[in-house]
Image (cartoon, rainbow, N blue to C red):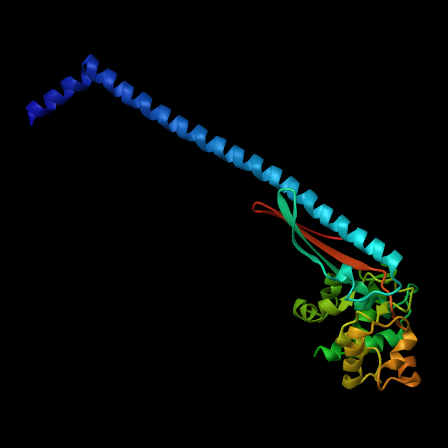
Length: 283
């Protein structure tokens, strides 16, 4: 054992041994340095690439929204009605643009019920709108009493905002109205149509639940008949509704005050993808 130890000590402390140890140490340190530099360079290149892809994706998303606006602008000049059979309603899916793709969807806000119509800009309740919203809630298995509760909340809390919700996501601010309740109703309501224009629901695009809530005269049979009729014969004027079997002047007059055949407010959703970078925008 002593002989082995003495040999080890001799090896470690002679010049050749020290030189070998220094060489091993330097090579090890250089290897660590090179690996570190390589990793940092790789991360820097990846970050730069992601940054470029993010910028490209952003502008492709913007181009999709601009194209949709162009569709709507042209449609407004060429057509006096708005229906789901028109080009604007068809959407675009995975359309190639530059190094990426873009998908665009346009939805009609005039197909929904504007919850701000329950209170006018002076803070006075609008009884017809409150009743209609209550019917819509009942259609969706939600307590129709929320209709009056929401109207009262607007009157009490939104004087500084002309008694309006700025977004439907604000509904859970009303006591008892939960996010889960909002999920049930969000696709049927809006805040974007002009509440000063009473005719802010498009009969050619309105959903069956909202349509049924517009009048107690509109039975399930009549609403289905209207929906079926407009597929082949879009309504060009309100009076055309009387061509639907079962609709007469009395029934039509019960909801004609809120309907139109043309829309003025749309939501555009544009989503782009470049490599693994996705950008989504709403206008």
